[in-house]
Length: 319
Figure 1 (cartoon, one colour):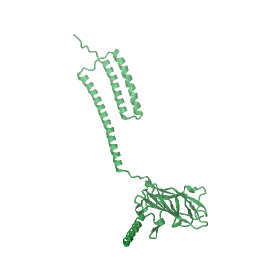
Figure 2: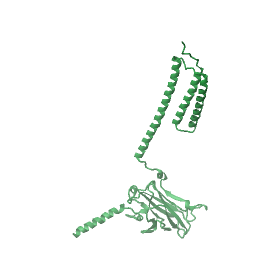
Figure 3: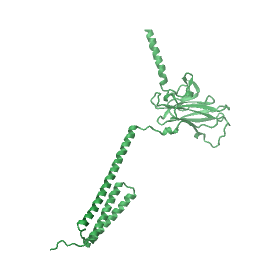
Figure 4: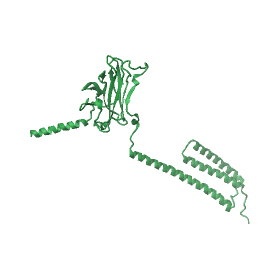
């Protein structure tokens, strides 16, 4: 019985040891990844397939070109990713100065000179105090991990490593009007931040909608254009048959033709003005087509009035 209890206990411990690497570290990553590998050097290998990704832009703003002895600088650590908007970090200056945690960050227990997040977030503000004497260039290392927020490390989490150097005092010439707070050091591909994966179903639905819209618009255009051509052809055909087989248009007395011509002329002018307005103002083509056809019809009415007024009188009631 005791031996079985020991075996079960051993299996539980081994299981926990196997599960531990895949659990997230919301309160800060470990300093030692095991096997003598430091996370600050190798990165968050339990996330994102174990390799750094340029999809994550890791940046630090407020970085001077060269430090002044004992001066304190304020750094802002930021993570940018197309879909993961928060995560964690690990930051170290190699022990040359003093890093002070800010809101949402903390000192690393195994390396008090380094900082990490105390809870998942972004845009952490920390302070770095330069050494009290010229200690040569300060080499910084920053690991940033942008996570998807599901609480477990997986391939959707992406991380990257940034290394940069702040020169020793007097090692580089600095412009007196340079605003250090605007100087940012970063690593990663900014273009990847604006590339969003499209849903194939949404893309296909949009394509089908476009086809339907084009079919409807073109179908209306072809229908009304064809109908207009048929009407115009019918009017021309009617004129032809009237002149060839009907003896021409009937006579209209001028006492009736003049007022009729004035009315039809006024209507044609008004419709022509309306047609010009619709075309000039960029109204839908359907409105312009209808107004244009009505204008032609009114003009044809004026033409018919003139033709009938000029037609010779025909006396058909002779005995």
